[in-house]
Image (cartoon, rainbow, N blue to C red):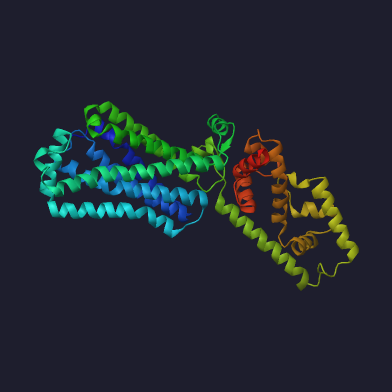
Length: 424
C-alpha cells in the first residue's frame, strides 16, 4: 500500500475521531451522556477506518471488500448511537425501549449479511465485489444466483434505505428541537464574532448535521467518483476532520449551559463544575450546621424569637429583596444581608430555612431567577452574558446552570417558549 498524501488526507477523520475518544476517556465526569458519546466515538472510529480503506485508490480488492463489510455493519449502528445521543442530550433522560429500538434494524441487517457471507463464502464474494467494482453494476454472470441477489439487496439497497430513514429522523429532530430551544442565527453570529455565548448543545448538533450531510454527499456521488477524483476525496475528508474537531470541542463543553467562542476553543478557562458543586455543597452543609448549632449551644432558636423580631426580619428582608433588589449584586453573602436586616447570619439563615425550606444561597438564586424572567422578556435583544451580569450572576454559564436547575429548562428555551406564548 502506498502511504502518500492522499492516504493521509482521507485518514484524517479517523485520526481526529480517535483523538476525540482519548480526550473523552480523560473526562472525569463520565455521566450517561458522555458514555453514549464515547460509544459513538468508537463506532465512528470503526466507520471512518473502513471508509478510508474502501475509498483509497490503491487498496487491493481484499482490503476493499473487508473494509466495505465494516462500513456496512458499523454505519447503521453509528446512526443509531447518534439518534440515542441526541435524544439523551436534549431530553436528559434515558428510555431503554427507545434506545434499543434504533438498534433492531441494524442488528437484523448485520446478521442477515453475515449469514449470506457464510453461505456464499468470502472468496466468492471477493470475486463478486471485484466484478461489481469493475462494471459499476450487478454482474450478468451472477443474475441466476439468488444468494448474490439477496446479498446485493441487503448490503446496498436496504443499507442505504436504513441510513436514509435514520438521517431523515435526525434532521427532523434537530430542526424541531433547535427551534424549541431558542436557537437563532443572530446568537450564532454573535458567538462567531466573540460578542456573545451559545449553548454547546447547539454547536454540537449543527456540526453533526453538517457531518451527516457530507457523508450523504459521498454516498450519493459514489465510491467511483471519489476514486477518479482524488482531490475531491481529499477535500471532503479534510472538511470532515474539521467538523469532527468541532464536535470534540463541543463535547468538552457539553455540561455547560453556555460558552463563549474563546472558551469553546479552549483559549479561556471554563467554570470548574466540580469545584462549584463542591463549594455549593460545603456552603449548604455549613449553613445547616449553623442552623442546628442555634439549638445546641444555647442560643435562642427561631421559634424562641419574639414576634416583633420575627416581623422585623421579614419586613427588612422584603424591603431589601423586593424594593432595593440587593440580590442583583454579584457575590452577595449572608453576612451582608444579615447586617442590613439588623440581625446575625445564624438567625437570618434559620428564618429563611424555616420559612422557605431552602438555604440562603438557594433563596438568593431563586430571587435572581424570578427577576431574570421578566428581565429577559423586556430585553430579548440582549446577549445572555449581559442578562446574567444584570441579574447578579458571575457568568453566563453560572446563570444558565442555575436557571435550568430551578426552572427545568435553559434560559434560551424558556425565553423562546414564553415569547411564542406571548405572541399567541
